[in-house]
Image (cartoon, rainbow, N blue to C red; front, side, top):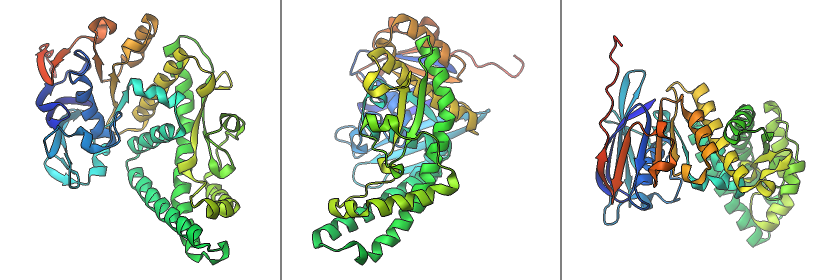
Length: 396
């Protein structure tokens, strides 16, 4: 898959923008704050329905505008489609494919991308919530129907927490909470599906992470990933506990029973605290280097390599499963953070993807072979773009 053309209206600092893309590497160059990242952020939104920089959609709308529009012409196996999303400040967002309305949450099934940015260092050094979000976005990219499962789980979790808070406030005892049992079953049904899917995903990621880490770092530090499950009694916020937690997957047909037993075990504590204490919303993806927790022990360079490995591994997983072909690889202001050898190894790692989008403040930071098509940006305006190379004809 690749992007042929991007149109923006009132997105971030762009009143309007029209950008053509080449096959292979596309380099966007400009000083900080000029709008390079905004361009690739808009494409990231099409594939994930979120931003890697902000949590609120309204931050994506240009100041003074009521809505922003992202419109991308995409190509896969010589078939083209037009994907569009309108991000609204005071009403529900809207989406179209080939001018026909679709549900916004269906957009990721038409376009997949994998974005790596400096913020992704938090995948290694940050809190479990970031790693859960990484897993869930990859789940949706791999199988878009999980967008609905995740949404339903969040709704049930919210209802159950409301009930627990009410019970705590009124002093209701555990035996009087028949309604809680009903919500428990919905939580178990949806949560078990997510736990099993994340376990399968982690198993598929593991060998790709190990390979990608060795390719980027230039040496094998035994990079490993595994899920840490709260239904097994693990405490993801405690690195010591996470390191000692069982790493083998629970058989899919046993997840629901383990989940129910965990809810029964923690119910007194849940009633006391008024919050759901076990489930996918409390799990983590445990990262280790040479059998030590990466979060507490990895150096800055090792953390960068691990974060890159996670994104490269996710691209490999999507590539293996996707009917739309390669995901578009986006490297947002990454090369400035890498030494020369890692820059070259990263360029090698992405060389065979159909399309790679790179942003940089300093052109010299990017290996020359990734600068075949360069676009220069200033103050939300495309000021210069290299002429696109001619597409090969059927006879070539």
